[in-house]
Length: 276
Length: 253
Image 1 (cartoon, each protein chain N blue to C red):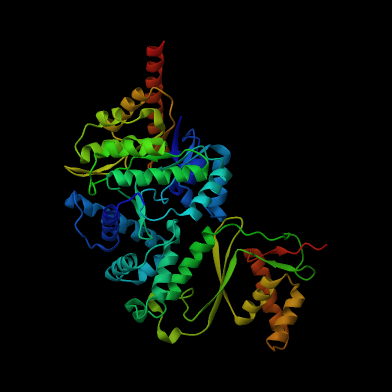
Image 2: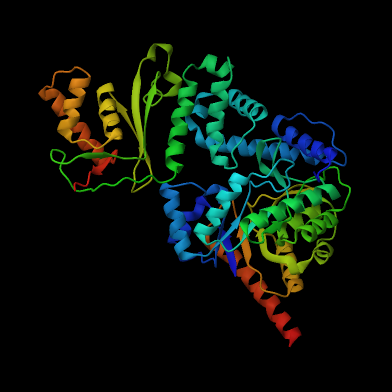
């Protein structure tokens, strides 16, 4: 199944539309916790129509600061009230020295940071009483690295025993920005942990840098990498189309959803054929 | 503590750079690309505050606006994990900063910021409910105030005049109320006289009948009850019922 990020920019259209037919929707809990009025009604309508997946922004799993337990409790309540299927967060930090930055900063690829993050993920999973999926973020510069990116990620996943949100566009962006082979990177991941996939567009701003904008259509090489990833996975994993800016016509979004769905179905058929 | 001090320091250095633009060397960094993080963070702050404060943005020059958001984000540690609270934190920062040049230049700017925040806060805030019925008669039934409302007192007419035309000469007492319309979620502002504000304050305490309200305002404010007053208050109550500032009538048992 292929879902879409429930964004206020096109929420009304999505609720009215028969053109856009995602299998589920995704929201960031922090954008909806404690709100009322018009948007609470719209979210309620959406939840009557679609299953909900959630993707946090502000928990700041990679932060040196103490976890925000009050916020975590609110997240837990939100997940329960909305019957959310998945809670995922980013392998990054968004708060440092008690100041929120509202963006995803890269964690230093070091063993101590990996252990620190893994312990926090374990604590979060214990408090939420469920496993969470961690997303590999796109990044534009390493920060004081002592490990390779893949070794850092795998250490976190192993120590935390959590699930993996595979953002295929992020892998593509990172492979371009840091000049490595995206397929080899995917091969090196513990794919049995992948419980959720994200797909999005990006913007290339120079010969050597791509920014993960979620504001453009998905490009063919990212669709191809998605096809490769789904073949390697060999299982049916929910996929999310992220579109946060430059919202196009609903037909265009549905066309991307259809393409993702077709690629996934083909990959699964091939897998079944091979298994038979 | 699993995290080494040096790792913490590197993370702090990146965060401080994003907030302030002051870069302290971090090993292994791509110096050209690291600037993206500062741009992305400032862009998020800029967009969020522009969206919350269109009137303040329109009042200030581009330079003043840019300085304001950079000054705010450099010096104020945003404490909420919910980004939509950031505008309130700007208000808190400016109101707690002594002799801020923008407050000196525009004495009404704090009120303008609060006025705009009020709209955001009421629009977003959790639903408040109160027992009431929509059927009733203003002369027979007690009136119930919309619980999703707030009263405000300003010294400048930020809700009445374009900010660019407000001067020191406008300084006076201004009263208003803001409320959320239950059906649409939209926010409506109503300019009030002190007597009408008092009437609403009485309703905020508990439901009153129309005649009780008239009696209280005349007694408490030492006003002679006249036909003119009756006409003004009747008109106000009827309009308030239409706009849903008064949400309905008390359910009599």
